Length: 277
Ligand code: SF4
Image 1 (tube, helix red, strand yellow):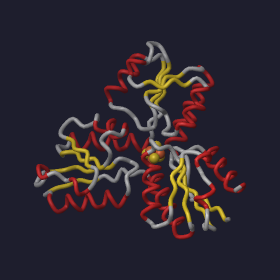
Image 2 (cartoon, helix red, strand yellow):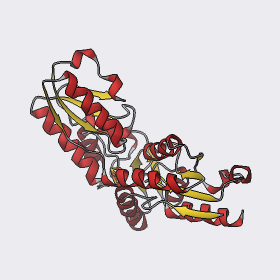
Image 3 (cartoon, rainbow, N blue to C red):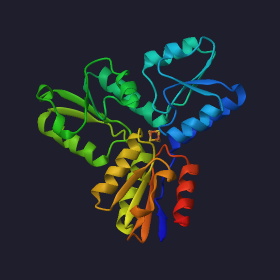
Image 4 (cartoon, protein in one colour):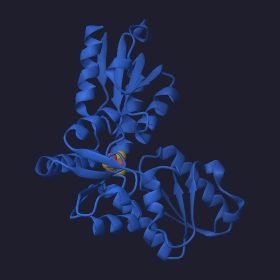
């Protein structure tokens, strides 16, 4: 069996930066409160918890005077301020690409556009971006979802950083047909784009594709979708332990792709297991 790994794959720049910053802080203080899991990967979260990470669901759960951490997805300006007020030190791990999306949303709103975000309204990154909009904002899951009330309006369009390029293009085309004026910021991050393209290339070579990453990871989900849509049998697993020998039958070339929140040690573990099978 031949194993090919997508290039690039695994931890993206933003998550790597956030986790390194968090780990350095944990080494110094041994206790850091993160608002939400700092990485959409249960195995890596567990490892960080052993170093002293405490994951909370709201800023109010961070004790006064503690060290707090904002993950790569970012937060709303209100939550950012609240954390800053409560904490002795606040470590900001917001990815620079997410910060750009937040700034674009703010500018579009200040310039009088109705802000349209392509994305998942329940995703923390999208909720954070929405917080920067002072006027009307809509989160749309696809081009098909353009509501009639937006027809004829001035709309400013951007995207959750991990959306598929094809979906963003389709949404923009949809607005071209119904709006007299649109302003578009492509806020899909380069790391996401590069990982999506690497899965497309891998699909041309592999007989089967394993996508490795947390079930709660939006960008891993997109990679698994791309793999499935390309027609190659695609298996989405969180860790090597979930891989069963039966799935490998009649497959000579196995492609491995990992989401932007999948640490290297999980990828190595999977390759080792494949080599022993
Ligand atoms: S996927 Fe992109 S935007 Fe999100 S954390 Fe990684 S580099 Fe930043």
